[in-house]
Length: 169
Image (tube, rainbow, N blue to C red; front, top):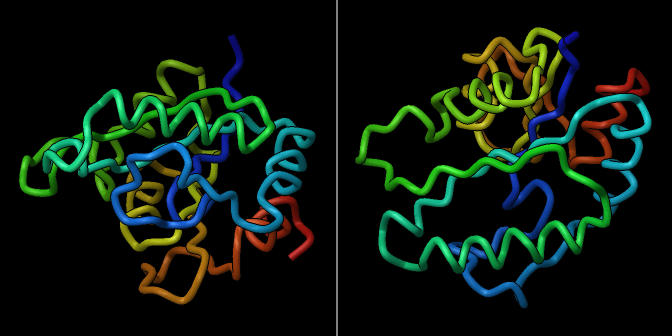
């Protein structure tokens, strides 16, 4: 089986509005231009994989079942088929290997979905997203104006990041 490139996508603040510990599916709000941007990536042959830290589970703010309900609402709201969804339920002090900035979720997805990490991109709104991508051997794009590692690229938002990924930005 040949390996395929993927775009790994942070969820909160990248695909949907960041609502701090979102546990209610009714709170899902897709950011402007996201649906079209994901369609462009899909048309270009990229696998689409969400990788999201959900420490609210580990902190006891909401349950795994709450996360599953929100994830279903996100899938419905995005109106595009995702190839994978991975989440880290651990609190920051648990020392797991899956919580970004660790590359565990990306590596697991690469193994599960036959992804070529060297041809893949991690897009997120935080420095930890970019660090996870870089640690996994991916190109990384940070959207917004927050801190970013020197090796990461910058974009205004997901549509701008997609333009850069596809060579138009």
